[in-house]
Image 1 (cartoon, one colour):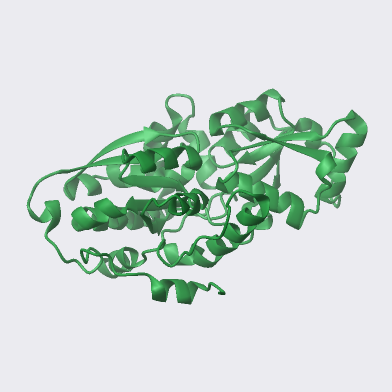
Image 2: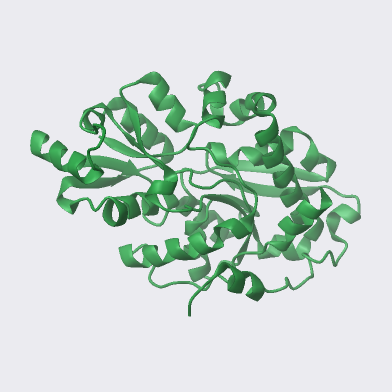
Length: 346
């Protein structure tokens, strides 16, 4: 069956409790606080969640967040499977794996698209002269060094890994003998690129601005849309249990994300300190966050409908590279009506 955005959205089931349609009082209507266990990865695309919290919109809605940081989306799937998370804020690709394992989650909002880019370290960047195709760059590197270029990315099944492999094999047509893919966490990838332990890797903001700021010889070699057209990125997904039990809380999260994405686009200066406090942890200054917000690798969007078709395409490719055993039907993964209500409420 051919999956299209229209067919997927038309087939999206109504949640059992009528959460999307507002049925059921939920905790918020009863005036009690709702504690939420939230998993995030430390990248700029998760900023809307922290902005919504800092602006007080989530607290006003009666939500209390307990945030846990993970090194990758696939690592977070284990927490979803164990029932220790209510909210997932990470790449969309691992959710296909989650559904294949029987974990019932719904993508209710996006946060960013085309966020994974390829960054070349100094040795590789020197060979990436204007007009030289990426495949030739990697060929020249192996010829000059006697070994393939080592490229760092997150684990198999993650969006960064899928994006990198798609760019290498499908877009750039790189010879597989010219590169070696090394799987590691987000922080480790950033440090490996900076230390020269690898010749390049997939990074997201603010890591792109961090590494290029510390070493100008490190260069952005390919943007996200070039690596995987309309590349789906970070999403907000909620467990079915949360949607069933707390429909008001679910709507409040999505409304907060929509408002935050709008504010980030309108007033990046205002939100930069908030994002620095959430992601910088004293190691990244606000000036770097400002550069990251203005980066060509940054494209915020809250509309989950915008990534449905690209997610289906990414899943097909994941099957080809062995990240998924088979395609998982997407008609139960996306639930756009919370987003639609949030936009209508603006």
